[in-house]
Length: 274
Image (cartoon, rainbow, N blue to C red; front, side, top):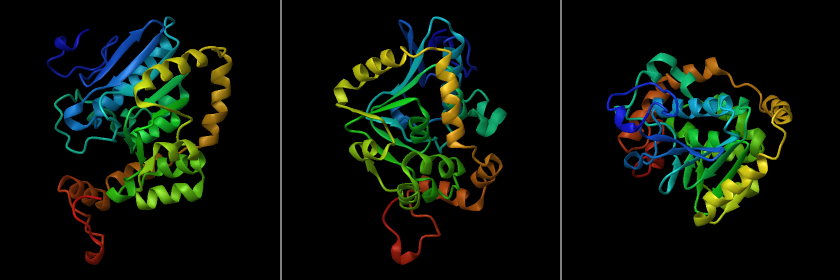
């Protein structure tokens, strides 16, 4: 079904992903999931998060498809979730499923290769998607950040995954300070496994997927199970409670109002949001 057939929000069906902001494209036997919401810098709504999850399951179930490339348009990959909640494309995913709309566990359990082509700014949920994908390739213009604690969110998924990805010292640094990491640093640290010139990113991602599809389709998921066990299981009950905490409420408000949260001492506050 085309986007035009979905003037009102509709749940996913076939290659329609449930939102006009994420496209499912077939390029031969390789599927592409393209995030395209430039007016909000590709910030993900609940429906967009679920679209990624649905796309992965769609590829796994389709014998004509061998893998999925996740990418985006413009100079932003994924900056995280949309805090405005006014997109108009929510068919009920957020209300119906809560945090279950996120694709993180689905990426971890995917049966076919997932290649992430990171075309620009990548943070929050976008960085989690990049880390959990089977191969992540960054444009040399990409940047990376984990700002959750600056927003008052005790992100226990990050607390579980990030230290295993880059080591505890670097993980503490990223989480406590919200520092920006360059593409070169991301490669050196292990946030991503490959770097490409910006204009070559799509070609490098396609070549990488071709290489990955040489792996035996039944052997790979068995190996991937060990990676999933290595990452461990986050505290989902604690995570859900943290998102609803008073600090998270204040963090969201400060972000929307472009100011520092109230917990920052007056003599240390900066102009604008953190």
